Length: 378
Image (cartoon, rainbow, N blue to C red):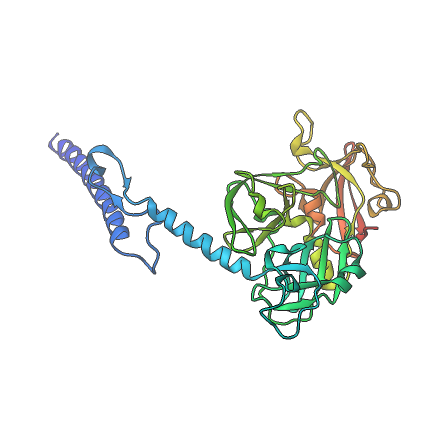
């Protein structure tokens, strides 16, 4: 009997000691976190008030303003860095070779008055801009680019992407500051973003939705996406670019205030840098994501479908040559499943013209696999 009572007391003592040491350990971690910044990395939430931790079970954040200060610093750093890669595109002028007080200011380039704004995409002088002139030769003959440090470069050549509505300009330069682009998965709801103008204007916001106007029936080759943000972009920042706080170009703010996702023109950028011309890969099918349907017997895959202006399978396309037809369900491309995380168009966009891909699909109850060769969009 005595042994059992002693065992019971030992058990209770063990439980009490565990509770005491557990709470002490938690307090110790908070105090250490508050008083020491490990590797320069302090609490992202400000200082902690642990005075009522034992009796009230609460941890109070004393200095939430630190969060705001840190974000303001990051916004300024992003804006300053982004502005260095923005350029103005102007109608060419014959500037007086020697400046004189008697000169009219209109003889010079007035920086806020550009025909368009562009973003440097290579150090040796490739620039992307929303199309502002219908003829490539006219652009090369009649326009100049002015960089953030006010250097003037005549446009050497221009290449237009008629699918996305963007133009690429080439100037003779080296060592230009470059920005990379966000891919499809790099922009998501809740992401902090920043519209930046060449004159220093900024517009901080956060993404609330990535919208595909073409849904539910979409093209396997091009579905322009729009980034919806938390509030309307100011008029002064229409016609410029949107950046993440990580410094990537996430999209372009058009004159209607809509933000065009960088993924809309990214395949053209990659083609230009590889081939020197804009070539878009082409598969030639239309589909509905099964993740967007309720009550359908399958949950994964892309159902080949048609809609107004969209054929299920385009004649003579790679999709047609494999024998795919309306009602087939594409399950995977090169082993990568088509599901809520892998949209068919986004998966196909990773491939280039001439690439061979294995297409796994389901027809009725039979699962098949065929090979397709990505073609060039005409």
